Length: 329
Image 1: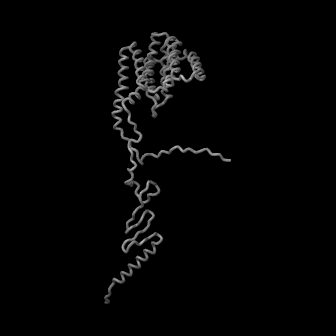
Image 2: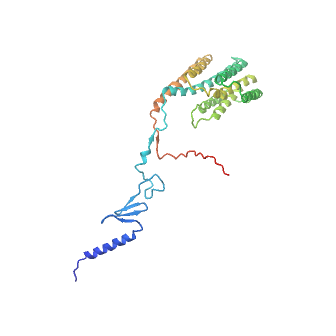
Image 3: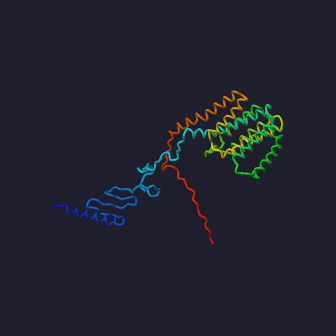
């Protein structure tokens, strides 16, 4: 047996293995940093001492190879924002906003009282027609005082409506005569509620639909026509309906909500209600107090607890791109 020291042989084999590893790793970017550590450039990062160090995470779908699908970087919540578009309202602003609903409610109540007056012969149809038309004309002159002359299209529309309404009045009177009165009143009440719910109060929302609101109100008006006595009563009633539901939003659009306007609507409507029924006037006042005092108070109180969060998890919004016009010869 021959005894010999194997350390030189092992050292030689280690050097050959390391040189082979280094030569094979030239194309992969192996860099010898010291005698005991090496760094290897990898497509997903850097191999250091046998451990793969990934590239820094980026907010890019195609630059994060090697990361798991459910990986969450520490910078993910750095873009968190709260209540960016929340506007704090005062109690007065909330009351004025609710006043728009009260104005529309007053118009609906005045329309219902007009039907009651015509149906019970409490007022002459001609007198009622002259009163409502004159009031609308005066409001138009006051609000649009810069217009010294009435537009031609407005005159044409008014004449066309008067002629068509007068011709169709006998047809509208007999249109729903076979339907029971209870059904007519219930349908009209539902249509007026639809009108109030979907009316455009100046707030952009999905529920707003001007066409649905107007059509519902006019449909409820047509349902009531069969309960009037003559065709002229129907003509007057349809004219009042058009003034209340089609003309009034246009006339009142330039008027901003104010306490004076709100009190004027409530006072006039209350005086008309109390001449018909004390119970109806009491219910009207309670409804107005609920809409204009309780609802704004709790709205402002609960609005302070609003907490909206915005961050990188929100859907991307593509902004409109304006392309300049160009001319090609």
